[in-house]
Length: 293
Image 1 (tube, rainbow, N blue to C red):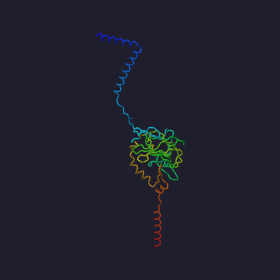
Image 2 (cartoon, helix red, strand yellow):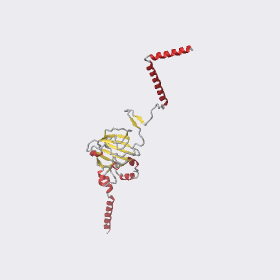
Image 3 (tube, rainbow, N blue to C red):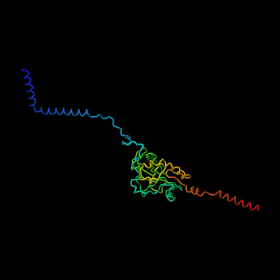
Image 4 (cartoon, rainbow, N blue to C red):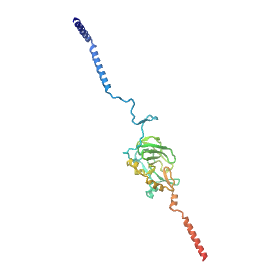
């Protein structure tokens, strides 16, 4: 018993001796804090969900040329809420100097929609836009994908956008093209700068703008400020035969469709060779009758 009491007394003495040192209490506090922090970290780690090592694929692809990320093009590149807009930044600053050639328009309106080159008349399959002879930015009328970029001194350089459902827009007589085939652009994005063309040199600096549905040119003005979905849903198949009939006997160009006035005059007022032959036969018959008498 005495040994146990002596041991307890000795342990108490040692404990008191330890706590008499200045570093005892700070060490105790630090040790306790370390235990608490370790417990908290362990608890959080045990309740944290696993995170995938590989990043999720959100449909972006790396553009190796410039290190930018582009959205992958989808089948529907035109938003249903989008409207068809003029291909310029400020529509109030420009003028439509030549209208679309409409087969149902008056003779005066049709004549005003013809482009003359080397005495050949071309039907305008779009509209020509100018800004007092000054250059202006050409922007995308609707969101779409660039399917063609061509240099052409005769027609003028041009860019073609595909908007899905057979709808295309053509931006002709431009320079300083800023897009490439395969690019996906948003409505209002700059495509190029207005320029000139040999075909329509009298227009000076301008933009020839076309809208086509299933390969058929339509009047862009008829669709401006209207939902793009209306254009995509339009069925122009019934108008195509009429268009082909109207183009019979005419020479066609790639930007505008030609109409030779001499050919039209010839069709409207054909030479009456058969009538002349009939008159000659009649005169010969009368002469023969007189001889018989």
